[in-house]
Every structure is written in C-alpha cells, then in structure tokens.
Image 1 (tube, rainbow, N blue to C red):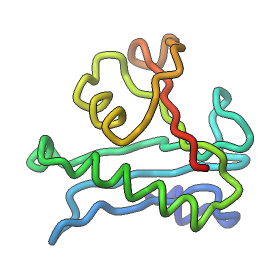
Image 2: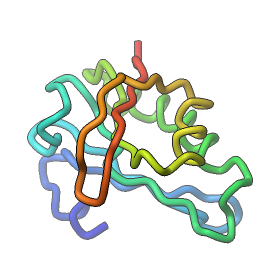
Image 3: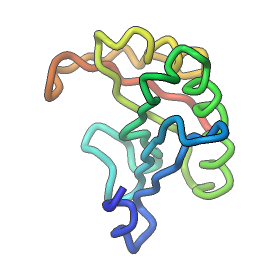
Length: 123
C-alpha cells in the first residue's frame, strides 16, 4: 500500500474491502502505471486479495461490482476495467465472471505460470 501513497499523480489507488472489519483489498492502476498488456484508456486491477478466513463468502464478487462505480466516478476517462488472473485460480476467475468480466481469450506465461486476461467495459 506504500506504493499507493507514493503515487503523487493519482495513478495507483488502494481500496479496502470492509465488512465490519477489513476482509481484503484491491489495487487499481491507470496511466503511466499501467502494465504493458493494458490499453491507455484502461483501469487495471493489479492486485486483489480476500483474507483466507473470508473467502467463499461473496466478498470478492461484491467488491468487484462496487469497484465499477468507484472507477466510473473517480476515473471517468477509463473505458474498461481489466485484469490478469492465474490460469489455476478457478475461484478467482469465477468471481470475475460473476462480476461481468469476460475472458479476452489471451493466455500468456506470467511470473509464476499461465495467466488469462479479462475485461469489463465501464460504459
């Protein structure tokens, strides 16, 4: 989260996922902070974690739905919300699909294995 605080230009933002306590977080990036695979008009979920004790309770899906409104309000120039997900992260992929993300059909070798790219239009 220190990276978020150090981003003077507002290119990186960290959001807490709260349900009476913090159950997770996600990190959003845009502009100069985008990864090479993203388009200039994208906002990227570069990290999302739900505490192990709270996984499987729908918090990830709810947070993903809520983040669309946040991005529309705070970063209105963003056309899509995009992310990469590990091929083997089936629960994560299901949560992204429930929240309206569509698999882009592109798979690449990532840092720790194969990744998929998913996107949802913000319009």
